[in-house]
Image (cartoon, rainbow, N blue to C red; front, side, top):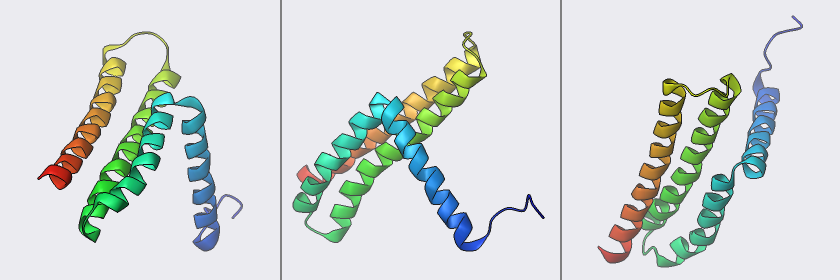
Length: 120
């Protein structure tokens, strides 16, 4: 019984703590995460002002949050790859490149969403 997983509210509290620790770790260790988070923070009020409808505001803000989400996943992939070893390996490089490509696609997505809403 001592090693049973937490359930209910205790599980939610623990998960929130782990999530907060992950956000703090990303903020302290990942410059790209800081930059993209600040970009989202600065552009969110602009999205609220520029969006004509609730749907447009949601798309503008959602595209910014997607960048931050993908950067968190990319940073997690990079941390795991770096933990495994420092030697160069084709698969390690591929994993990091694919994670970076995902961030790029999320940035492209935001540019398209913002462009279509503001100029379309």
